[in-house]
Length: 471
Image 1 (cartoon, rainbow, N blue to C red):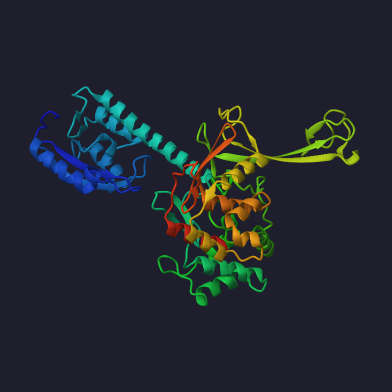
Image 2: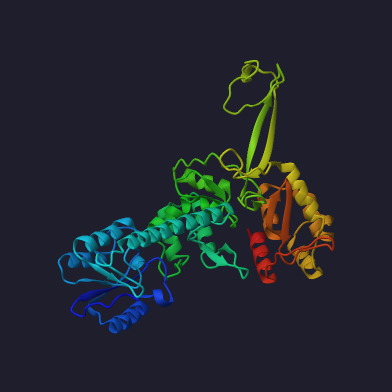
């Protein structure tokens, strides 16, 4: 407990909570005020005024009540400040320094239920330490939040509030995903269709959305004019997003796209935006779905474009080159050079700076492992019958064995189709020593020699599969 405070001295009672999050228990403003008043009464401290603020203290100069209090302290209106902890006063070196300066030059006293800080107590050094720890807490929290958002983006889930037509959703297992908004997704999709008819301008589509289609936001408001332009220029609707913003790093989302790449490009042409896809515009089936078994980073993919010189038979990466690096023969002058294309998946931390030594794996080998896994998957009879009813095709193999048909056609399917299949059936995919391990989502099961631990509610599976069939 701090030493007794002379009753002739008056103090400001200052309480703060962060505006970014709702503090709880003793950190809430009401609880701080109650506890500090009780403490002041026990210690005989006279409270001149109770000052409260709901502002973050991580940046200097953004708290008007704190700034006003410091001015009044410099003018001698009070002898000190009563607060719950020092980090309630400051979490940045500028505000912390002003408090320490006032303590030294103006005889200010800071009182907390644990300790009293003043020039007479000769414990200013502890203030330096506590303010430093408060600043470190802010820095660590910022780094942890950024790392978490980056990981979420790499996994294929857009970090932050989703664009119009989608909803942030939390599964019963705790995983946060993105789902289609049942009320607004069809309306936004209709806006794209109207634009693609080439009969309407974005302003016309905006008026139709509000006056004919009856669009209302979550708060019951009509769509703003700027929103329709944001919709028609956002790559999120085609399945991609940039994170961090303006970083040039693009990710393939795991959400269900609203439009195809062809539709998106056509709308950009109609709007005369001259939109250019980012350099990594190639669609890969499994990016964002697999984690590295060594370092837990995301597994990414890249293509290798190589050429075999028809003169010296030297193999080299030819993109960006005009001649063979070995014999200096111009590529344009070569007669029928052999071009090769390889797709490799590797850890995003692989390389000199990443520090991960997980080797890369060629796409064909990775798809082969997935096909082998599909051969060990079974499906309960009711779901098998349900899937047969959903599949509309004349192929007998699909009618007789849906899972077998999916397995047979998986390698030749498009990257988008492969991604949908893997997302619907599998979870927790990890790659270690070029070997893939995974769990299955319900209602899929491994045969008796395998084990599955991941599970999603049956209702979720049926709902998401219906969405994928409709899209």
